[in-house]
Length: 606
Image 1: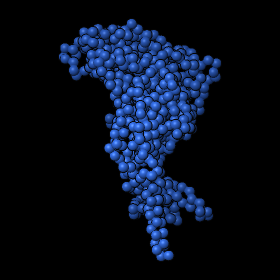
Image 2 (image 1 turned 90 degrees about the vertical axis):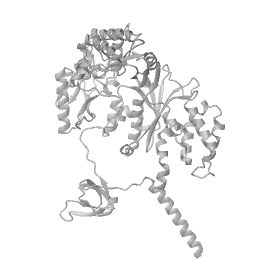
Image 3 (image 1 turned 180 degrees about the vertical axis):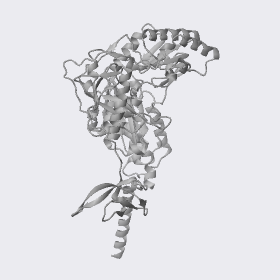
Image 4 (image 1 turned 180 degrees about the horizontal axis):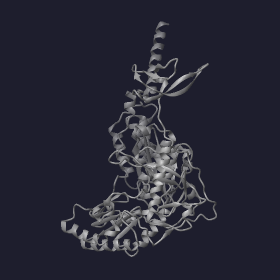
């Protein structure tokens, strides 16, 4: 009996250690600094078995590794030593909806108030290529000096078109103003006052009313940070008829520009603001603040048809110059095979912009370059290269060490097995590793490595990976895990199969890993659409996710300011969100788990 008791005790101890290992995988030491505020989990008197969070209370000092002195502020027990398990950090929240400054989350730059940098409004602010000779730079300056008035801090406005908004017989959309702190109200008041002075907005008696939202701008050089102004036009856009004017195919423009030897690019000053709203459309751009009701006199960011209107304008401006100029919205490029031709082409394009009454932001212009970044590609000199290889995520995939890692890789590759000749025989050494009879930590052999490398190469070349076909609809399949996000850009073949165009993934920052599941899934959508923008903008596409609540992403309202902000940032893109079951979502799921799998072994050891 004693022998059996000893064996049972050892088995129990081994089982407890195993359970502790799994329980501690995501465990982390919780620490607070003196001066921070915390919530305290306290019993609810007289119910000794019921607890609630109270506070916040300041932490004067740390007493031990797991206990802290907390100032409860009561007369009976002003201070008490409390175990860390009954404490959690208090985060002070502002009254306004503001996102964290996450560069990756921005899918579209918001229209900014006009620059005050003198270089932006002077021809002297133009950037010339370092490869140009002194004479070539002098030639360029001579041409640009003839159009010095084009380089201005003030936008247009152009006389060639206006923006109209067709809402049919729809009733005016009126949204409620959110409660705001005094600081936020003052920020909005200052921004609106600036726009009124610029003539961008004016007082209105319109029955339409959209909501104002503040967006944080990047920190300035001196560390200061201002709030940007944005209007939520989602309700307005839902009743607006679509302008079907086409956006150029990005692949055709890239090929045209990439063949040239000399390249110059121009950026219009506050591009959208160079187009006036038609008299009947002004009232439909109205927005409300606590200090008044206003509408735009120029085309604001966020309107459903703004990209189509802007593209129509630049097409009219550059009509007849298509053999040496290209415009994808406000990305205007001039390209030539010889230097003398380039000088002539520059002059003709500048003449066209001048005739249209447009203005240019000097510091955003690059003249006489051998290569430029255009529509997400590095082009010039007969070469076209993506800035970030669309297959880099696959190439960076490290050899699996556990069955979980093998399953994630096979989930991605197996999704496209129809495009890999002999997939079953190639993958055989890997499928053997995930057998129930095999150990959790795999025995990685030479045959496994060969199969792994063969599949990685197959995923990155035809017929698995295909070039985009802009006559077909794009599908963006996104997913998020605890440690990363991933997406696959694909299109449907004539046989009804999904064929990938690009693979992308991103490791989540520590603070992003703390977000809720729906926030991580929404961030996966926002980041993916920003990254894939050169393929998607101007087209109608489908976003597929295994997170059902995201089907209502574009109608997001309520208290979650982060989701609301991200939803607003996607106003300029035309897409629908579809739910897809997790079992059918293995391709995007594998990419999102890539970064989690990298750390799996270290988590086990910890």
